[in-house]
Image 1 (cartoon, helix red, strand yellow):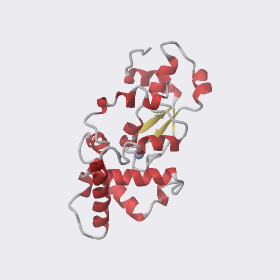
Image 2 (cartoon, protein in one colour):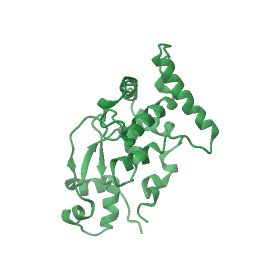
Image 3 (spheres, helix red, strand yellow):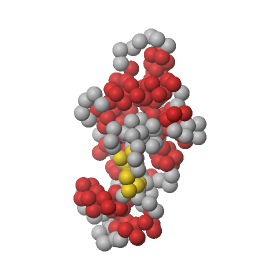
Amino acid sequence: MRHNYSRSAAERRFARVYETVEGDRCIYCGMPSDGAYDHQPPVYVLHRFASGRLVTKREIRERFGRCELVPCCTICNMGLGAYHGESNNDRRREIVNWFLCDSEFPEDKLILDVGYGLIQKYLSGHREKNIYVFPGVGRAIYIEALRGFIDGKFRSPDDFPDWLKLTQSELAEWLRGAPKRKSQYFLDMASLQSYDLVPDARSDPRGQFE
Ligand SMILES: [Zn+2]
């Protein structure tokens, strides 16, 4: 049973429920958030919870706890879709899963290897023109940051090694360079033609509503 879902209408409807958490870095990966936020839980989850009836703020709080708007980069936001998850690390696993090597496609490992290789060459002074254009580079950066948080190696972006601090900020700078570049880069990194090709990413990621 699915009620017509309009994201903007649902966002307006539930706006009062969310409290904004201040910050300028993505809480999942540490990238500059550039003023973007992630809804915890996703608006779509509240929409499903309400399923066309009236719900009170209290009902929502009893079911989901505090609802927060957390600083989040566009790419992590797309990786999450409507995935709710149980913790920030659980959400990081959902995001990183888009970028990890797809073992069914051997050439996918090649892309990632080239990404790591380009970063290494760049750092050792063999200047490449712009390594960030290549999506394998972005994947390597996202994987290292997200996995570091998941493994407990990083508690904040301050714990990043220098190379990760540098490449993350340069990647962020390049991504800001053109409109829609961030969302296109997510699709490129995840080897997707279009977000619409994975309806599950929007409606029922990982069967969380089953
Ligand atoms: Zn992020």
